[in-house]
Image (cartoon, rainbow over all chains, first blue to last red; front, top):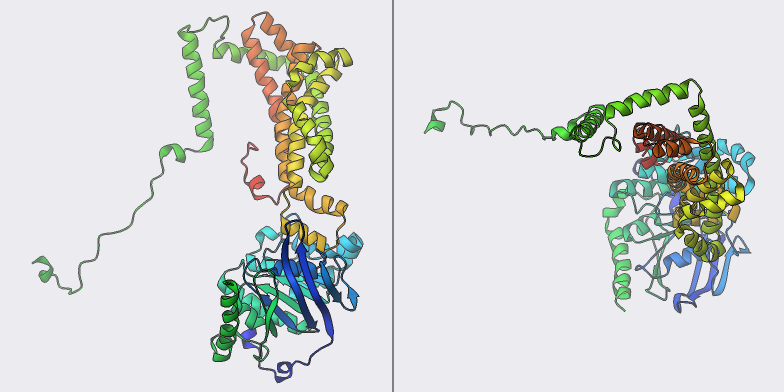
Length: 271
Length: 289
């Protein structure tokens, strides 16, 4: 789908937008287990940018994401979203997981407006139905409003999860390996869909993944993380033009970027 | 050779590979046939045991005698005679016992499943209570609550409430970690998480607790009547047994089991309406199990 989109030079050179999410010297030590999970992480997400973090398992990626989502306080450092420090869950943070985590007792549209219902009550949720419908259209799920999640395929369920994440119009999207439970074909397709949605809405996104090609094809910057304690070893700028296509994955530039990231991980994994 | 004589140069086609999968006749039998056959086999065995007088005929009636008595009891029930009154007494005990067991079990289950205090401090006591032979409390309930239905309701509820606690508490732990994290990112309060996530996610567990309770509550009511008198079906059974009227005992037990089945089916029906989204629940057969 996205592969057929015409090349648009305007989106190629994306201006460095205003800062949306800033982390300064964020460390996390779990005192009870005496484990240092993160060591002085600095991160800047600018508006409309797509960043990824990649690293060996157990490197503290999830801890970083939880801190960014306001689910876990950092031991040190500052976490600032839209100029305000993050001190707990916030409605301008949207999150998505490996599992769609739709609730089977709610219809698709009820699942999508759930974040509104939780925060503003049933009436506000009902008022958000029109918005939910336009989001369903955005992800190509029109007509599935009244369907229960059991009847959705894995890819469709993740699309609905995207809608639920977008319904509160968050300032930042936190993506925790969102498509890694899907098969390879759906996964490539959903990645291209994700790019389209993020470009269309000028969304600021932060992706945690285990897949180097996925990180490269989606991101403007890929942060490579070391094994515990988690630290950014290098931030690789991805200079492939946008919109990206799956064909780019066979090009030499793509291969070189993947190679560069992989070399870090190979070293990092054994030290 | 023979191949050289064929007109075509192509090799002979391979033998057909069409094959069918064999299913044993015992697995192919339609359900009604299988159930009727099983019933017939049981009745024949019963008749044989009776015919050969392996057991004294005073103790074991013939299937026919039992069937005749089923009709007698059935007529009595339909004509609204004393047996219907007795059945109504037992039904009331079962219903009240069930409601109390569910209400109490649900509240304690939420306390145990939702709060650390309940899990750490209350649960050990509940487990200890559950290990007691609850039937032994029957004389106490009679002395506290009298010979009326209250003492039977108390025993029925007492015997049935534990599975509801376990079902509710287990259900509250059924929501997976992602779902809980999602609720936290949405800024849900503890109450919202309980009502909108943990309770719905726990419904399948809760209902399996209810099904256990639905069976146990009938046990509790009848045992209560055995030990505490009254005017219920259990009392009829006790009297019939004392008179060595075994066909009557059998037919009363069969009608009583219908009461148990009815409560069970009602629970199973409500479950299928409420937990329509749970695959295992929907896949359960017509008998509700």
